[in-house]
Image (cartoon, rainbow, N blue to C red):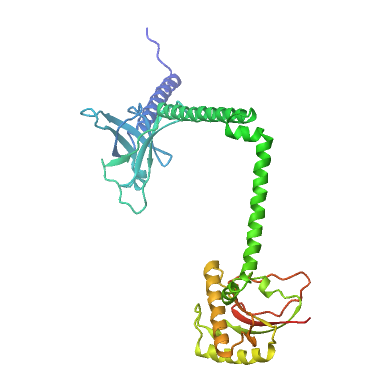
Length: 373
């Protein structure tokens, strides 16, 4: 005798069956979605020399977004040829995959799963065609990193060994010197040799000082004094230092006498010096000394500035001596007329000396020193 199933129980059984079918369908859908089988996709390929253990089903990301899976691994046809990976990419992300996009294999974590990262190309590059090939980068393997680190450590160890050896050699040399071994060690340990060297150095310094004093005296000894007087080979600072003399001067701008960077007097410059010559005749006395000093502010090359101002001072001196005989001081007497080029340097001044009025940087000064005693 068969028992009939009640209406409510039949409905419950039917609901249970439908729930199981729905759950199974949801699972199938999720599995398909994880395998990118139900979404719209497009295929992309990349060739790698090494794929570092990438397998079918591994994830593909575009700019960090989960975008697809590795659909296939095509082995090389011959040794040395690349491995081809086939990707299935979400169609919604296709605008990001350009013809100059780059694919690389990375590892999630230190020893995690392999992931293929696709870096989008430039915005102005064309879209990658379906089934097109993306440029591939060589994957970074942990083994390669360890190998490079080991090589670096070996180089560091070699440097440390060389440094240790060098330090040992330096210590050995220092020890030899302390023991008085070798020429340098004997010199350090021998007080008599040290005193001889110091004495020789002192004598050499005194000899040089005497030589400088003799040369300075020689410059002012007849008949050599006339040559040095003409060329003004005297101390440039001392030639302007006359503490016992009255000082009178006239200043001319460089542009009034010369063209820029030249030492040839212009017509206007000669006319200016005619007035200076007349003044010198009145201002100078029998024992007066005349100094012609030239200055500039061009500090680019000190040697060239020195040469230029020296030639300018000598040109002024030659004109005044030739035209006005300012070097004549009476019967068989000659007045000293010095020409000195200071270049871009300013003459030294003594503490407490009165400050003179501001002078033009490029100038020629004609100065008369007259003794007061």
